[in-house]
Length: 189
View 1 (cartoon, rainbow, N blue to C red):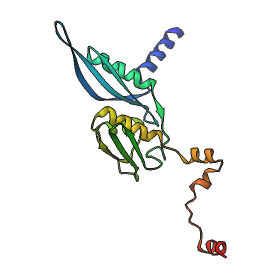
View 2 (view 1 turned 90 degrees about the vertical axis):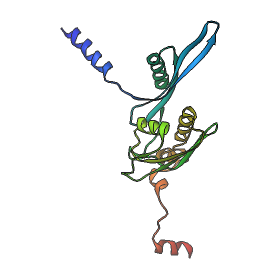
View 3 (view 1 turned 120 degrees about the vertical axis):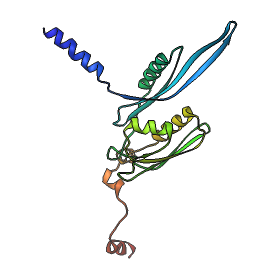
View 4 (view 1 turned 60 degrees about the vertical axis):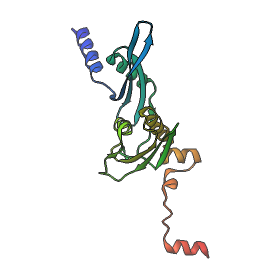
């Protein structure tokens, strides 16, 4: 009886996915052969845990479901972690590039939502970002837009990472330079 319960628990765990995935694009591709044309499909998928991890993958197969499955597996293998401020937005503004694709991503106040187009929106939703403003300039190719977005997200650094790299405390990094006027005058004298 206990063995059967363990199997059921394992099945339940397998059925509840740890990651969410979003299909971004499907292309029908053809190969011309002696007898005519052979058609296949290429899928582009973004996968994330909506808590700061995201990845993308592409897969090709003769059938659409198989291409999506391959792309999802590739995306899970190539995941990266991105630090988020308050679990809802980016720490700072940044720019990402890949080929002719260029994207600009900016932090946003709470309640803004995801203001981004197509493939970038899929990346932010799977990452778990709730407030961001992003603009794509250059290539409209979804592959390049996703790669440019992930390039920008790789540049994301949190105050903790900066403090660790510089050998300081997080509080020293976050100081805004808002000294009191009296303190500034004594420093000048």
